[in-house]
Image (cartoon, rainbow, N blue to C red; front, side):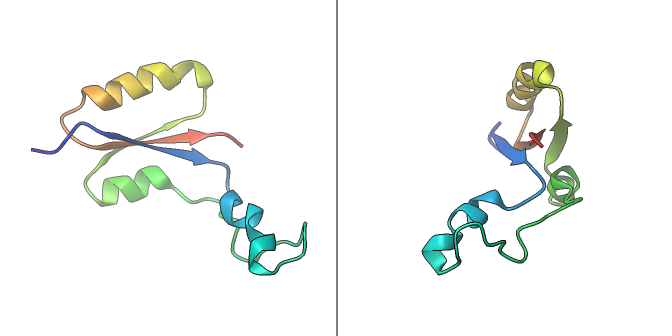
Length: 84
């Protein structure tokens, strides 16, 4: 049996963490790192492709319910939380 665990993805359309650490990798402050823009990446579809339930949440008022549903499920699930 799989554990009822929820994976949360904060979807902002880019790989912001890599961009923030760019100066540590020798990039100038504010210099855009190629490949950090990820428009149209569908984490829900990716999760489903691996047999995991997935749900996109864009309304903050629905987040609590979505998380409760995810944790009440029979196995792992992913919540893609749209933040930008």
